[in-house]
Length: 608
Image 1 (cartoon, helix red, strand yellow):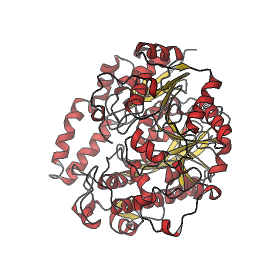
Image 2: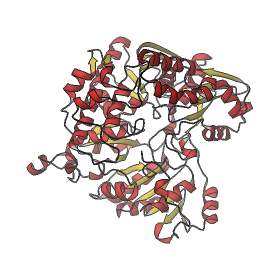
Image 3: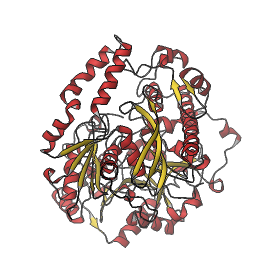
Image 4: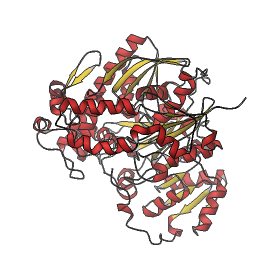
C-alpha cells in the first residue's frame, strides 16, 4: 500500500518550520533559521521544506497533503477587530502590518502552491489545535490532559482538553487580549530584552532578584482567579494598539522607563524578572490543578511558547497533581508544523495512534539533517583543515580527557535537534566541576550576558545522584534542585550578597551548572536514544567520577544553532573554543589557520 506523506508548515510569525510525517511517523522536522542563518526567521520555510523533502526522498508533487498550522483569515479578523476596538489608536501598527498580510499571509494557499510548485490539497488547522496535537500525539501516553499556553494564535491564548487514542478535544479556552504569554513578553520588553526571543533570559535572571513586585502585578495588572483563569488590565499595556508592549502607566507602576537594550542590568530588572516568573508559575499551577480536576487524567502534556518555561514545568511536576508530564521539545510555533501534520493524520483522517511501550515518538527530537564522515572528510579536505579521524573508543577517551582538563569542545554528531535546545547533537561541552567555566564559556565562547546559567547533561541512570529528579528529562525542559548532599553552604557574608554579586559564589560540586538558587535545567541522556553522547559522558564519568557535562547550544549570541559542518567550523574558528569534534574527526584549534577574509562577523548576527 502506498505511503501517505504529509508536510506541516508554520510560518509568518516567528520560528517558521517544516515537518514531514509519513504514515503517522515523524520523518523529519527543522526550523528555517538553521538554513537561512537568521535567528527566529519568520519567513516561508523554503530551506526547511527542501530538507524535509530530501530526507523523505520526495518531490513536492509526491506529497499527499500540505497542512498550515493556523488559520490566517481568522487571525486577520482578530487584528482588524482589535484595531476597530481601539481606533484611531493603533493605526500605525495596522498600517505597518497590512502589506505583509496582503502580499502573503491572506493568500496562503496560493503562496504555498507557488513556493512549492504543489497542486495537491492544502489544509489548515487552528493554532492551538496544532499546539495540542504537538503535545499529545508524540507523547508516551495512551490518554492525557493537555494544556497549551502562548502569546496568541488566532484568538486563543490558552486552551486545555483531553487527548485519547487518536482524538483531541479542546474543552476550554482563554482568548486575546488576555494572555500569559503576552504578560511575560511585556516584562521581557520592559527589562530590555527582545520579545519572542529574550523570554528565557528573564527566566534565567529571575533567581538574582526578589519577588517585590508580585503584589503589584496581581493587584494592578491582572485579575487572577482560583481556577487559573485571568483577565489582564489593558490600561497598563500597549500591545493591542501600539508598537510597544507597555505604556506610561506601566512605567509609573514599576518606577521608571523600560531598560534600554544592552544597558547595565540593575536590581530593578532582577526583581521584575523574579516577580513575573513567580506570577506565571502561580498561574500555571492553578491551571494545572483545574485541568486535573476537570479532566480526571493522570498525565499532562504541554505545548505553546510558555511551556518552554522549564522552571514552571518543574514546579508542576514536583507539586502538581499529575503523575507524569510530557512537554513538546519544540513547544513554540516551530512545533506547530509538527502538530499540524499529526493533527491531519490522526484527527482529520482518523488514523490509529499507537504508543510504543511508553516511549515518546519524538525520538530525542533528533529530526534534522545529519552528515556522514565522508561528507565531513570532503569538507575538511576542501578547506585544508587539519583533523584526526579517531575510532569511537579513542574519540570518547580523548574528548573526555580534554573536558577533564577544562578544555571547551564543540560536539557535532548525527541528526540536528528540532526545537530551541541543543541536546548533544549540536552542542558545546565543558567540565561542570570547574569554578571558572561558566564565566569562560559565557564571555569567551558564547559572547553573551554573564548572568546566564548553563545546563547540565547527565546520564539518565545517574540523575538522582546530582539532582532532585527521579525521572527522565530528555529535552531540557524541567528545572530541578541540585541535591543537598553536593551543595556548598553559603557563608554568612555570602548570604548578604545581592544580584549579580551572587554569581561568583560556588554553589555545589558542579558549580558551572548550578544556578544561584541551587537549581539546574536538566537534560537526561539515555543510551538508547543518544548512544554516542551517552558514551562520551559515561567515559567522562569513569575518568572523573562525574556523570555530568555542561551542554550549551553550538552558536554564539544571536546566531542560530549550527546546522552543517561548515557552520560548526566557522563558529569554532571565530570563538575561543579549544577543540571541535565533527563526527569521527577531532580538530585542534592550535593546528588551524585563521579564517581568511573573515568579515566583521559579530555584526553578522543581530544580538538577541
